[in-house]
Structure formats: structure tokens, C-alpha cells
Amino acid sequence: MISTKEVLHVYLMPGMAANASIFEHIKLPEDTFEVHYLEWLIPDRRESLQDYALRMNKFIKHDKPILIGVSFGGVVVQEMSKYLDVQRLIIISSVKCREELPNRMRFAAKTGIYRLIPTGLMNYVDHFEKIAIGDFAKKRAKLYRQYLSVNNKIYLDWAIKHMVLWNCDKADEKVVHIHGDKDVIFPIEHIGNCIKLKGGTHIMIINRFRWFNRYLPEIILTGKINDKGKIEERI
Image (tube, rainbow, N blue to C red):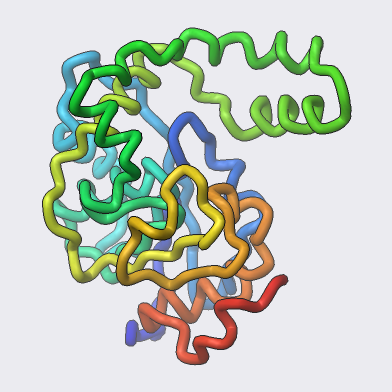
């Protein structure tokens, strides 16, 4: 268990193309934690994931930080941790190694088909909101605009490439993994050794924030939830 004699510094890394507003409802006790938000940098086209992680580490201003990453942000904080002495490393809606990638991503890596994804269309999110028909489409367009603001094509091409080609053969045992059993991006059947949140989807950091606010402090301090029954609480 982590000592709480001093304030603990928690760094939050959003998912691919997302900004830090995905954490807007995450509230940790201020007497124990100080939260710092990381944002995506635009990479060089040929920049390695390792070099990118080293650049991101320049924003880590405290010793023994707690790193928390969502989705591809979870991959990045794992790479960052290789060069840091972290107190806790937590990933949410992410993967710990290549074996946890879904078959479609492994296929995309093997065939190179990921290069055909039209990442330039992200620039048309604003237009999509204007022409969206129906309440669901309008709500989805609004969410895209609010949370997925990193629409630089160089960044998107780079991020997709390094997600599907991530060179990690073995999961790091120190990683604490929180995953929803309804995640369609990274299906739970490929995920091992995790805190499984019943009904949790890939965007549960947004729509299940009450659960995280209740149990994330305990997970940070102990690396687990002591009462497993809490994992299935729908709050």
C-alpha cells in the first residue's frame, strides 16, 4: 500500500485523439491527491514510441508519480514508465501486451491495412455535427467534438500505427488494469488479469465516472479493490 504522508501526484493521459476533458468528472480527494493532466503532442512522422514517451516524460515534474492512461494513452504511460520510478501504473480500457490486442488489430498489423484508414476525415467532425440527423447522431457528433479534438492527420496516422504495431510481448506485472466487460474496442475475452467492471464500455471513464470517483482512490493506494463485490456496482 502507498503511504499517504504527502500528497500523491497523479498524471492522467487521455485516449487516442482525446483531450483531457474526458477526465472532467473524475474527482480525487484533494487532501491525498494532486491531479495533473497530460495532453497529446504532435509527433514526428518517423518518431518511435519510445522517443515519444521520453518527450512526454518531460511533463512529469514530481518524483514517484502515479500514471493513469486510457486506451492508447494506457500504452503510452506503460512506455513512459520504463524511464521513471512510478508509485503506481494504472491503465483503463487498454491492453498490457500484444496478446491482448483483438484479432482485427493483429490482422491490420500483419497486412498493413491500417495505413488505409481515412484519418483525414477527423477534420470533418464539425461538419458532421451540423448535418447530423436524429437525436442519437447529434449526441454522438457533440461527444466527438467535445472529447476528440486532436484531429491532426500526422498524429492520427502515427498513433494508429503504434497502437497496432506495439512491440510488447509480455505484460508488465506491475500494471493495474481496469477493464469493462462490454468494451468493443478491446474485447474482454482477450484481456487477462484485470479489475473487470460489469457493464463497462470503452468510454466508461466518461459514463461511469461515479464508479471511478468512489473506487479509484482505493485502487491507486492499494492496487486493487478489497471488496470484489464493489466491482459490479452500477453507479
